[in-house]
Image (tube, rainbow, N blue to C red; front, side, top):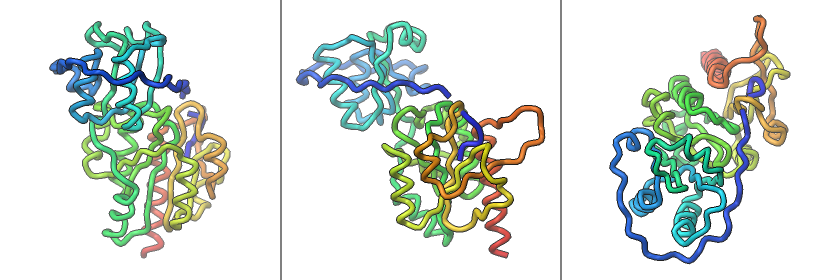
Length: 281
């Protein structure tokens, strides 16, 4: 559910077919700053991280670079299903913390992702109908961390995020979640719209946050439910919105017309909690 039009969209470009793999001597990155941020710079450091099994979240490559080492890195990252973005050197320079990125920066997930079954297993163990957050292209790590924290506190059984055009479980997200990532399963999927179709087959209904929707107090938000929150700038995408059963809004009385994505998620989530408690009693 996205409460107003929420972000900027990054164009994801498909890499060319990677070159044949060759042996490369890898040098580990021992920078403590990198350990904190989950960002690894330089060809050898990235190679070593991938060989060590670091969960890749997003790979940034300088546009135009094509050689065997880059091909090897691309091949390994694609096998993990991570997002690849080709960007200009100036963007890598701005991102770099060492000034020695060599045209390659890898953002690693701070935590491993859960499976869909982990979410349903958690709901079953608690004897509750599933309650899931689905996030449509949330790009701000602070928003994602805050939403995961809210999901945990309101008793949701998991959070689903898309693979592309969205932030993953970076160190910033983990910090913003105040430790909630240790307890709330986060699942990464290729396509949110298709995931909604699959979850409908398992009995879930979906409520999408949008300013033009029905006021949340007038909607039945009990039972197995997925709460869909949209991108910080553009809101919930048209296709995802059309898949939802309810379009829900938060009543607003002020002089501005929008809520932060994580705040909107919290307000709507606790209306779901309220309705579940009323029904239970």
